[in-house]
Image (cartoon, rainbow, N blue to C red; front, side):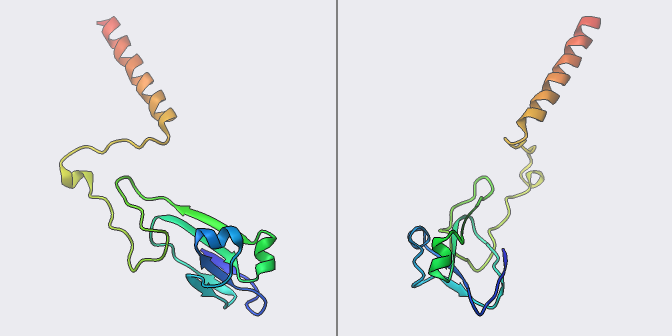
Length: 126
């Protein structure tokens, strides 16, 4: 995440869900005020950011982000961790074929229908 702002007039705060809802600027988990803030979200889960100016936060300067994990991943609480999660093992290393993802199933479904149609046509022609 990258924020560009006037660091003399505002800041970015990473806060809890409750602080996000109430625009509570006290006791943030992290505070940034350099005007060119870069935050790397290295874990899955919810992240809550608000303006360090309570009046700006009340006017909507806040952001709720949910970082998704890969299948089989785990929720780490939504705050920074020291390292990125380990990648899932390669299907080749496990000796099995990869399972197609659930997303994009419409095109996968169409491909399967097309293949079934060709198999059906081949059977009829034999």
